[in-house]
Image (tube, rainbow, N blue to C red):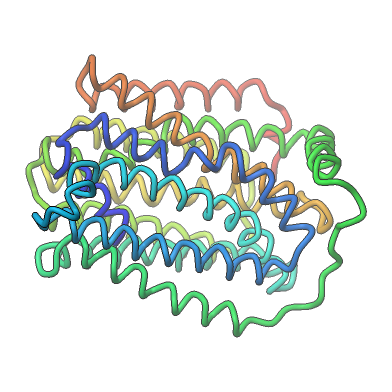
Length: 384
């Protein structure tokens, strides 16, 4: 709900695809610089406590964003500063939210294998993806209608309240005691993570493909509000339906992975799913029909979660328990740290060419890169 409201709020303030790219950049750039540190910290402290701290920070930021949106609509003299600089307030809050998320994600990823047996890891990751993407169905659908009923500020406020449920859930989980790595410096731990990665050829190629997806494919999500408002002219509820279709496809993709149990020929699967993902983005970026855009959003969600699940399952299986936090921090940096740069690139390109053409060009480049990596990388073709 917050993602929908934030994109819509920025468009109301600026009516600019460029500013959507800037906000996407501000919210995600911390992943590029802080996630690696988050992975080292995850191997050195209690993961649950770290998650509770980061979730609490994000709750406070959600309430702060609700305040900015609320006071922006008021004309009192003492809130004029907020009124005049709302887009910069949104950018700052998005940045600090990204900092909290970049510390949160490696611990979150590394904690999942602690909660299940190794033979159930594929199903656990798939079900984790399913619950995450269920929120992409319910959140945008409710978010679009909630904006019409209680406004943008109300959406941000409800998001802040929702963190209470997250904190309660974290307090309830139980898992075996883990051995914490505190005998070496932070930088030595970080160097050890990269040295470990260099010795694993299959993990290296998977991370390179993750980087391609993140830089050239994922940024299109930032611009979905632009397509809803400008290209399709469907309003808040239409935006909610587009994101819900993407989320529904992702949930069904996650259920497919969970039902399969063990994914065979993962190198082929991840390549084909990635190409389908990029093709759906190209079609969506050039669609002027709402029904077609909904279908393409569904295909993007389905193929995208197949690809991402293959990345996640493969890397989790290949990583050792001692190195998992650091490996997942490198994965998180690749997956979530590069989209801000891609969003900034797409936003800059949209100043010279149509936004749909810019995103199509980026997705087509990514598809060609996937084909090239598959053709040239034997470790990827042998990944089973």
